[in-house]
Amino acid sequence: MAATTMTRTRRSSSTAGRRARMTGLYAVLVLILIVAVLPLLWALSSSFKPVAEIFVYPPKLWPTHGTLQNFTDLFKNVPFPRWLWTSLWVSILATALAVFFCSLGGYAFAKYHFPGQRVLFDIMFSSMMIPFAVILIPLFVEMAKIGWADTYVALIVPWVAPAFGIFMMRQFIIQAVPDQVIEAARIDGASEFGIFCRIVLPMVRPALGALAVWNFLNSYNSFLWPLVVLSSEEKFTLPLGLNSLVGTYSREYGLVMAGTILAAVPTILIFLALRKQLIEGLTVGSVKG
Image (tube, rainbow, N blue to C red; front, side, top):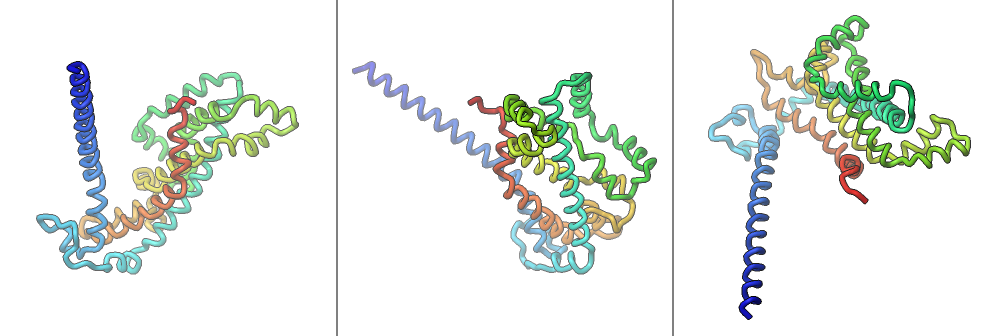
């Protein structure tokens, strides 16, 4: 009887301890969520405030005199639609090319054996460790020598085959595409490019979706490289255009907040459309079947 009572006491104590730990964990997660979401809420609130109300102290999350003037001015007084359109088509084209070339490179490293393969893969893999700031100036000089400075081509071509994308597709193809499937297709007379397009690509759609989201966000939000390579204001992408609203003598913070909120809409739609592929692509290999 005494042993049974002690066992129940221990179970009750263990359950209470587990609940306390879970409560503490949820409290920490809620705190992190608030810290992460608060800047977005402040930007959303500020986009509906008059400029004089944005920086009042103490700060107010809810606008006292709500207005749509910032959004109206964004379309009337600055070329916001042109910035948005430029960012969208540049990002979509760069993403389409990157998905194709990364999957092609990943397939070659995953399923083909050729002289120097290991060395090439090590060089490609090592290039991921180089900070972008290190290659920024040499890359700009290269673009200027070719004659691509201040052109949209310079925003797209250097990123059509990122090392991370090739590495990611290689890892996914190794796990998702059995060698026997490729051999069977060869025996049936399929060409090598036909095997890649008709068999490999459909089997790695989750990875393609994840890579597309990752590349689109990188290109769409890119600021430093467009700032360096573009000099004509009429070619500005959305991040450069919004940044131009805050200058030495003029600070249109209301327009910046409204533009930032509208700029987030395409990325949210892309995420909602490809979230299933994104999650599957990022979790590949994390669960052993």
